[in-house]
Length: 270
Image (tube, rainbow, N blue to C red; front, side, top):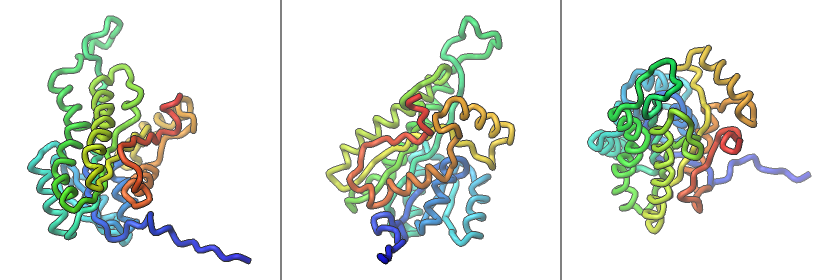
């Protein structure tokens, strides 16, 4: 009887590589940091504050997968330059960058005639905030890591976009514009850096509630909504985006650049 090895192909092995995960305090970024740490990646995780980040780091350390973490504003050039410097000082190398910062505000751009709530429309400040936290953050992160990647002629960037990049919805003009912009930025930067051995790709997740930071009622509402709106009839698990990110950072994705992969249970086709 033929014996088959269960060894993971070498192309998927990320052991010893160093990756920055910006926006890892909760949600999808936390799921990504967890999968990478469990895979032997040396992770430097950032968040605007350490409120949730320290808890994530403690959990991973107790499981035997320690990570580095620090507070940083992903929209600040100085902060992200400091993050890259810290990664290089701590690890002696930098192989990948995951930009996973984002937020949304659900408002119309002008008052709607049938809006009985009388809520205020999206302000200039809110528009700029949404673009900054969903799009500018990736630009700033890529710029901070870019010099190092270009000098070593290698590197992997994974930008976390969203379902709205392909299908905008009512009251989400700023968010949809930012996420769509991020996918085009991913494509343009992939072409800019391709001659230097750097791969730039994006992941566009659908509904991925965080069981730690979401109230149970919110989670149950997401599950009910998913059962009717998502072809696979469930919301996503945070670990699933982490696994896809692992692939994009690995040598298995060496011939892949400029792509946006939707991981949303088929919602984008619904």
